[in-house]
Picture 1 (cartoon, rainbow, N blue to C red):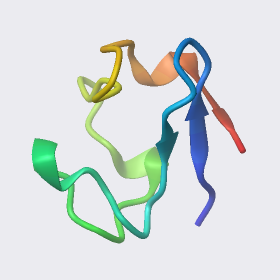
Picture 2 (picture 1 turned 180 degrees about the vertical axis):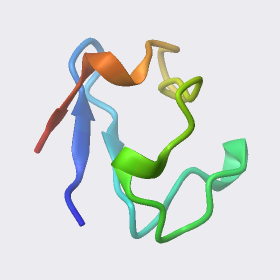
Picture 3 (picture 1 turned 45 degrees about the vertical axis):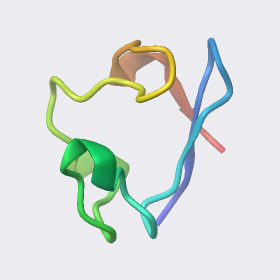
Length: 52
């Protein structure tokens, strides 16, 4: 699974880790994140992320 980087702040979403603080389990692909998921660091939407 690919990692994705937040353009504005540089946060890397790693599907192997997920985003457990926001209810996203490890093993969740970026494509499978809910549409309303936002960057846990700066709060922008998924559209601001690019494949690493």
